Image (cartoon, rainbow, N blue to C red; front, side, top):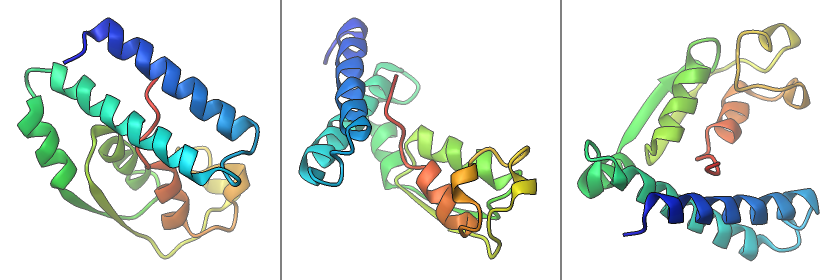
Length: 134
């Protein structure tokens, strides 16, 4: 297993590479490269969580195999889904019939101006994908 310093360096390297792909709009032309970086980022997140004695390898595997249902993608559902995705929950089902409205943005942290009119469940799904670690 890598040391925490090695993990931090590797995470920065992956983050930089993903930012370059996004910044240059290469994600559309090089989906395999983006997928490879996302896979690497997922593995690094798992390594970080394995460093935590409370989670360990078995705990990470259980999180990845788990499923959560979030009903509502508003003021409460937004942070819940973000935390679940960040924690490494393997599958999250989002249910909401509403669309993102300008009046939602001050309290529904997963939605952005660019997603106005989009179904909230879709907007939240984009936001709750596992993040690239810092």
